[in-house]
Length: 302
Ligand code: FAD
Image 1: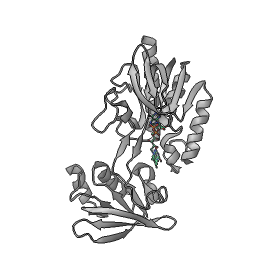
Image 2: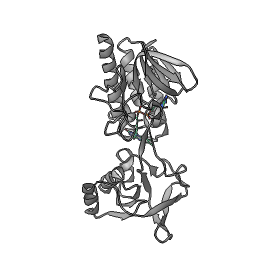
Image 3: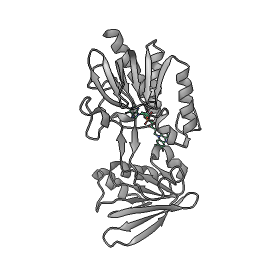
């Protein structure tokens, strides 16, 4: 059996595995897709001490760093369930069972898509999901935010300080965000809010140039010119496979404490799959390190 089995090969998982291996622990990484979300990212400008890199390059560096240690990489495999017997047992979708004394779950999250024509085509060419990451790329430009919940309105307030103008599009007749956020938003001079509208299409040639939407009260089709759109309709943690085995919050995030311990003894979690308030590469790596050091602490006590 492993001392530490890490599930997930993104920034959190790789950080956890390297920290574990450096403690001399027998370490494995199980990943459906080694690299994680950064594989879908173009420019990265907020990974501190590296002024600019690109997702595929960072994913390559993660792999190279992991390979310097004696870490078993089990790629292209999905975990299906976890249970505690004498050891922890992780069942794979393909049937095998991997045993370990401790497990670190780092299965990340995925942004919910609007699923309209143009979304895929203009991803990283105007269609963005992370205002902390990509906001500055749109300095001085017109952008839209899809989604009037807390994350959408926080994004709109954030972006209004950076870009020229922000248009918020909300499907429902009113915004769902907290009142304080709405009040803050409506005080900003460069924000327009459209409610009761349905996004129909992202348009453009090489890059995104605009959004076509439908007014749901009149069925009228409208168009706005924007160079960027931030889709903010939810970040979904990849934790469905855990069922009731480990405590998750109302939106499915694994509940962890300051040591990244979960509700199951010997099981830790890190990165975007947890209830950490902010989801970023640097934060995921930090929590992966914390989870590994906590697993080490657990192993020397048990
Ligand atoms: P992930 O990167 O999501 O990795 C999860 C891993 O778990 C993957 O290997 C996946 O295959 C695996 N996995 C999932 N389910 C299972 C399972 N059941 N069994 C086995 N393996 C499984 N952050 C920044 O800091 N700066 C940026 O500029 C930036 N830009 C971004 C741009 C885009 C388009 C996106 C989508 C995200 C961006 N982010 C950025 C966010 C950043 O990518 C994430 O915060 C970070 O990747 C989270 O790391 P993670 O290891 O927790 O999860």
